[in-house]
Length: 406
Ligand code: CTP
Image (cartoon, rainbow, N blue to C red):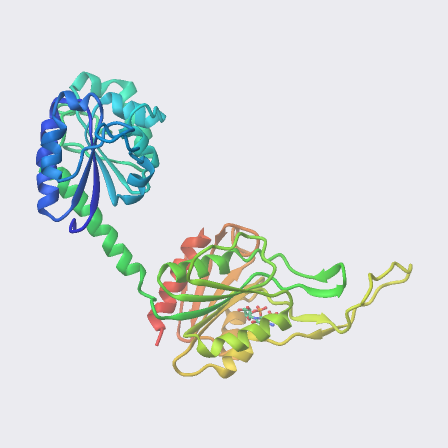
């Protein structure tokens, strides 16, 4: 797990600094590359010569290299690393990290670090138990840093034996466990690699005249969350987007086609669906559009105003009609009454493999919310989920899609 991993090891002024030699030895034995960054106080406890002999790299401690005066770039180190480990971490360094006191190379490196950071505190019990140290450790943890300690960690009520640095082999084991989990998540998350998914999102606008349209309250959030989830799992996403108010996720796998009307959305989908493995139709498509669009702004006349509407193409039904055996089609239904039977009949009419039902009677479901409450209906089963964030709902929908992808 540590093979080829680039680790920045921060060493500070603690008696436990000698143990960092053991950490380096184990990391290197497991195939990691180690770059030491040491504080001025750290050098009082262990010499840079010992450390560079073990790591086969010059030890960084000053902003400028003492040998040739070149600048040590903390930004470059922050980009180079796969992880930063600060072991031993003194109360002083922990305090500076918590408050951004960048007065040495180690703290500037920490502040520029793009990789996960692990901190192994080392100090006597009184310093460790002090509310200030405890509060700084909590702050570091709230910033996403991993605190490595013996026993059950600093939030435990009993402090006996605390403050002492965790043993080197346990520190290295925690790094290994972290990378193992990250790799497992990464490979699981690529479970849709090689798949192509067409997703429609948002409302459509049907033009009345140059300044007016018929639209609806769809924000597009549900469709965008689905697009993000598919991209995260490695799928190529063709996102056909009406005029959405939500922010569109930036991801290399998401290719976006912007449309305004149902007719434009229909044309984009008919072109993209044949090469897709699945289509997920979350857009709130206008069922009707004005028969004529006025060239100029319609003026008030004092009389009633009548707009004559004609039906729009049913995108879902058209895709359902050209769907092949290897393709999947997923629809949405937003209903106010007779929800299940309406959704069932749409499932059949539009040739969906499953339909995601939202009821406007459920609080927190449907348009203009960050949450949703759905029921997934397949031709022979039905499952209702609790109220969740739209990102979590997207996970449920894509899990269901993956279970039937051919
Ligand atoms: N849909 C579509 N094209 C349309 C209308 C709807 O692709 N012109 C899709 C929606 O994206 C959704 C599903 O069809 O996935 C159901 O949408 P809904 O508006 O509920 O269906 P309608 O057939 O319009 O039914 P209703 O009579 O309830 O309006």
